[in-house]
Image 1 (spheres, rainbow, N blue to C red):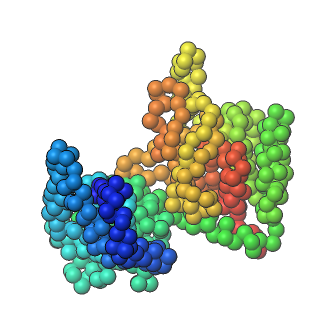
Image 2: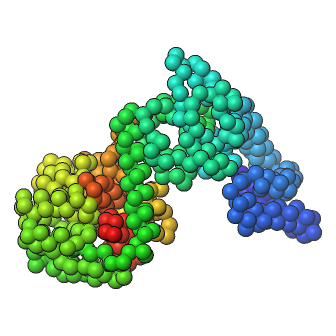
Image 3: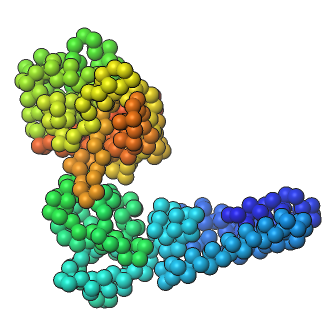
Length: 487
């Protein structure tokens, strides 16, 4: 990149280069043609190697830098020659340090080969070159554990002496991993699968690998609990996706009960009802704490609990109302909570349909007043969809700006553990009003999914309904948690 910038600079300032248009075109046109052809062909766009024939033309065009340096005065020329020599030397040294894992080479500016997966996957990174390293690792283990493998190799592992079972292979093979394949034991997973498009393997990212083989393969050891959580999380997303895909075949609309604590929430509940009812897939009715206690949820498929004080909602519902909601979800009803409605689902408010603890915090003196630590303020936060979230929500763009108003913050996932809550989107910025709140929000779930009994749950920390382009997330969440239509 440094040489390319220097070459462009030389081209701009040197009239002699610009005068030789034919010579320039002889180099630039083949280069541009290769890049354009590879860009418009979808299959070629997946493989960086198809662009490699353009590099000789690029190198020749960049070589003008040498002539340009000769035209500089002595001090700048020495500086540029030193920079070029240092750059060339660093490439040679970095290449030697990575050898024999040259396929996985990325320079230090890109983060090195350890972080190559952040830039390129597929054939640009993993051709199965580390299978022999995987065999050597297995042979060094005292008990030579049998491996469950999701590799990018075109060689059958047993042919090179690796003991185990293939659970996922390349697209040329028919074997595709299912949640039922995930049990306790040892796993060897290619970064192509780990950071690819399969939701099942994305859950392994929350676990620290035991070891890395080369730069392409991670070794994991799952406990029975971790295997159960990954399997359940994958099934949860798959079932919600199935519900969304099958909604067009429903004979009846999804019946949504929009919760209204009292008259102070009437306008909010009415507006939210109109938002959801715009979809031909849903019909809405308002439900009060009294309605909930009297069994009105039996007429609903989904309960939608909007923002507002979770403490006040819990008090209005009382023990009987909270038990009614809990039974409704356990029997297969859907639950969508926004901000205060998300708080309500968590431990501490008596509903307890989500196991994960939210960051509520004890009361502390903040800016001279005593207030709970979840008071972070009101404003806009950046939210990034996870792979699981992108499977469920039809958002344009991976990172979104959402309105935030003192919403709940799921406690951050710890190393070596997984959460029973599946993150559908994570915060990429944070709000805080005191030092105790700093660095506790980024990376935690902004949208989360869970299961309680037979019912599905989606919780929103921020307010997507407050942004016109994101209102549809509420309808899609309602669709995702709706129970299967009775036949």
